[in-house]
Image (cartoon, rainbow, N blue to C red; front, side, top):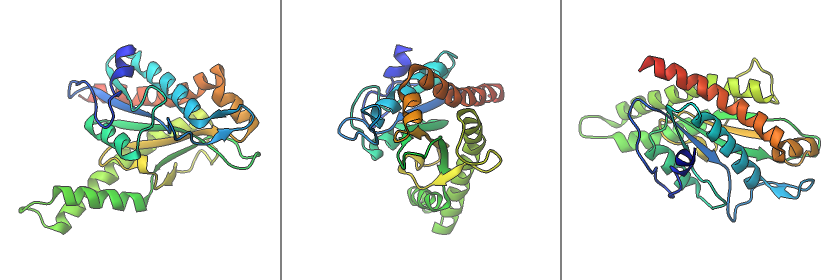
Length: 239
């Protein structure tokens, strides 16, 4: 466990190595350091605390499997830029990245939301990938088409995992719909299937109690980790 949690303590790069056949998950606790995120007035505590506590539990549950590589972007109360977080995800050659957050809004707003990258974000990432991949042997149009196919495949890979997380955590939207989509920066690691989970509303007293309570954090972590473990098991059968 300690080894798994220590893998990403360096900023902007992945520490340690893994066999190419090992399923790698990067768990990103949102905010940290001077960036506290949303704030719970009922608990008197910040989003950065809840996201780190839940992310640690997710990582611990996944790490128990033994043959899955788990990386935390941070394991303490430090500030990491969005660029640094994406750099860790990319340098780890992650099979999946999950960013853990909590929401804010009106006091009566409650429940979790699960996001994958939207079409606008997909186009931005594909453009970056195409620019990086251009060579004398590939024109701009071909490079963009190939990059777009790769990024679309990563989003499609993330969708069923996101749906299973939402079913377990109790999403705010209808269970038969696609996951919510957004242009969040942490969903834009090129070619990496990425999911962002808003675990509940800190501005809702009941959600806040769950987000900061041991039982609530365990339940949320289980809802996030178990679909990932299911995917890691399927990946192992295919390699």
